[in-house]
Amino acid sequence: MNRDEVTGKAENVKGRIKEAAGVITGNRDLESEGAGERAEGAVRDQVGKARRKVGEAIEDIGEELKK
Image (cartoon, rainbow, N blue to C red):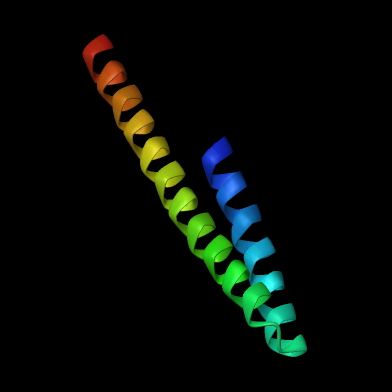
């Protein structure tokens, strides 16, 4: 896992907690803020996964060229 994936997962969890707290307390602003953070975390996680896959593909190409 790279930094984007770890940060994305952390933001996602933090957003879920805020969203749940907002639902429980009836605080729509907190619920909305949590939903936004959750979505942002999910996007960042996906970007990190894509970056990792590109890096792995480049490494594979380099290994093939060495052969």
